[in-house]
Length: 570
Ligand code: GLN
Image 1: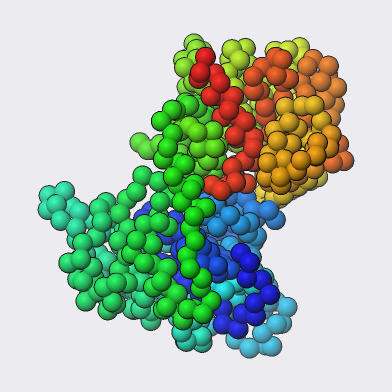
Image 2: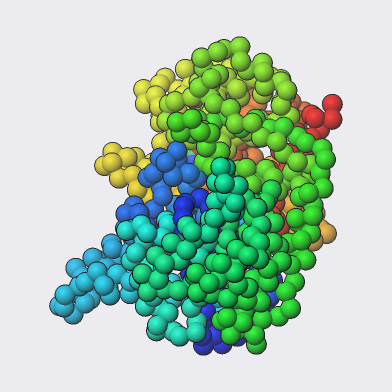
């Protein structure tokens, strides 16, 4: 946003808290508030607070936590950070993410360094003060007019009290600069058939108990909120009826900013925070263009995503691959198609060796990142099928490593090829642990120690990958000249293993092309087959899904969808 250089004397803070139950879309609400404020010319930044003790999301089981979203600086965060980046078209860092563990760790370290001058260090106010310091730091670094802070968890939980306390303290220190948005849920019990406001009233009074009053209530529900209930909520929750925003379920989360604006949320925030002089006329045209484009396609390409983290009890957890799903969607719209995704369990292909032939019906197959042994042989069988039957294949991280193993076993004649991660004594560890990872793993030093975050990627001329990135940069940067033979760009990573340097020559001789490497040439970042052999057989060691944005789809996903669309047409 073009507001840099503006002296920001009173940054504004919007705390987003959730009531009634989890999963009502706090993250999307916080992100959408960001989008509508950006559209008014404001510089926005956002923070996510996760109330758990973990220092980051990196060590958590994906079926427990959902996706681990990696930032440019390598911070392993919550998937909401992905929503912020996608809605705001910005990149964040560890300054924008905190957990209870992180906050306490800093306070305890300061105490050990005698930074509290020998006094008693107390939960209140020292913990909230550290929370506020982090919020102010992120605000300052972004030179933000407005900082949106999402407090994870639900009102009434013990573990987010300390963060509500931080909001309360900041509010009284900066009168007029802090807004509290309660995202609540209004159930419609089947046997009554009427939308009920009582749980929201309880949530609001729980917030009052923490010394805070909601300024705005976002009323999530299956259906829109009627005027009668707006007024009821207003009366019982002590706010103006116009400040109760109707937020019914929508088919796409990207409709939410536009829906909020139907109830004038942007104006309400700007006037409540006295930002009239800073706010321009809202311009959501780019966003609207994207939303319109997303509704147009009538044609569908079908993609099989083969992974292992899908089930939790009876439920399918597509959340684990959220960024991949979003990246596929954006690139679908870019190609004028809808992407329909089937999540298939890799283990099923192990149990039933004939099942792979059912993949014929798909236009493309994607294998995402992963860890460990479970499902690996099933995935390798799927990759072999995609290669032999010329079905577009896109392998991400583990999906690339397993693609290399498949090729090594079946084409390069290394029948025992494997990854050191699951078969440490395999005859041919074509995927091996990175040198600097060895001592970390030996010392069980797992938290935040993978090769994480953004690294340079060098693409070589006359390859599939080079062609894809060259086209993208030509379009995006409007470069007329021929793009150079070598392109350097950046991608985000999260891995401990890599293609072993011992086998690169053998693999290349048998036809596998390494079209992307680290600039020093040591790490293989992209493996592919030439188009003469396969319409799209590409694996990447990095995670392009973390950089895919609605207003800027990722070129690799777009190329994968384009190849899938071509198969669909045949
Ligand atoms: N398990 C592999 C590694 O650590 C791949 C990781 C991933 O897919 N994110 O290298």
